[in-house]
Amino acid sequence: GAGVSQTPSNKVTEKGKYVELRCDPISGHTALYWYRQSLGQGPEFLIYFQGTGAADDSGLPNDRFFAVRPEGSVSTLKIQRTERGDSAVYLCASSFRPSPPHNEQFFGPGTRLTVL
Amino acid sequence: LAKTTQPISMDSYEGQEVNITCSHNNIATNDYITWYQQFPSQGPRFIIQGYKTKVTNEVASLFIPADRKSSTLSLPRVSLSDTAVYYCLVGDWGTGGFKTIFGAGTRLFVKA
Image 1 (cartoon, each protein chain N blue to C red):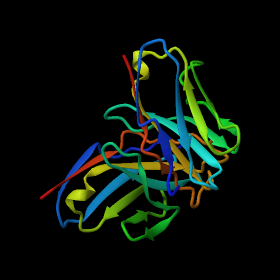
Image 2: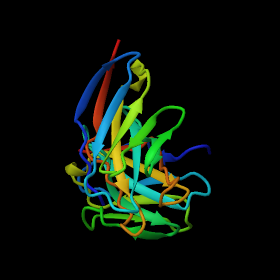
Image 3: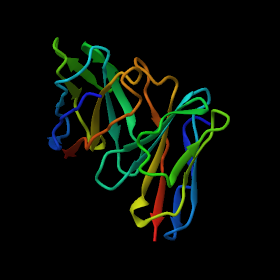
Image 4: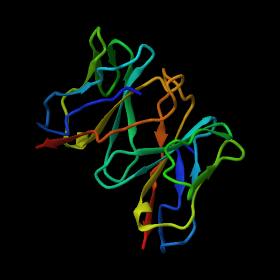
């Protein structure tokens, strides 16, 4: 595909349930990022992958959040025991390289997660 | 990562030039300055990146003074479609860590 894709576009779940959000980065991009964005706020960094490994997971809010990228392309963000406070738009981005110059991140359209 | 400060909001009219200034007093030697644009219900989109002096591309210019403690994003002849949030980011995303901090950004509203 031409850009970063994310599925589903919308996800409604109940408090306490488990959810998985998927990101397909641009082919050839080794760097992959997850963010979440609440209304009126800028994107909040969650985790960064270089290849298959999580190089920086300092933004994950707690141990209910986990992300994987087993083959160095597609990534899945997993949220256990969802809480109403997890409701947000979850954004994925990829870049050809993580460090400047020319490390621009290309973002997907996001997954809107609503926890009832 | 260098902390950035930018105006919360700005208003402009169609056809005017808009300049958004970002302060980053503790910028490090290896840090670059990057600007993103975000429309409602979309992910951010890269606009421009620079290290020093002036960078220009087809949509914007970035002015960076010699001390690099601030930078100015310049949008020539804005249109209604330039209404968006603009984020200034500073970092080397390497030795300084890979965390990308967007902050609250500057909400630009372009009026007819």
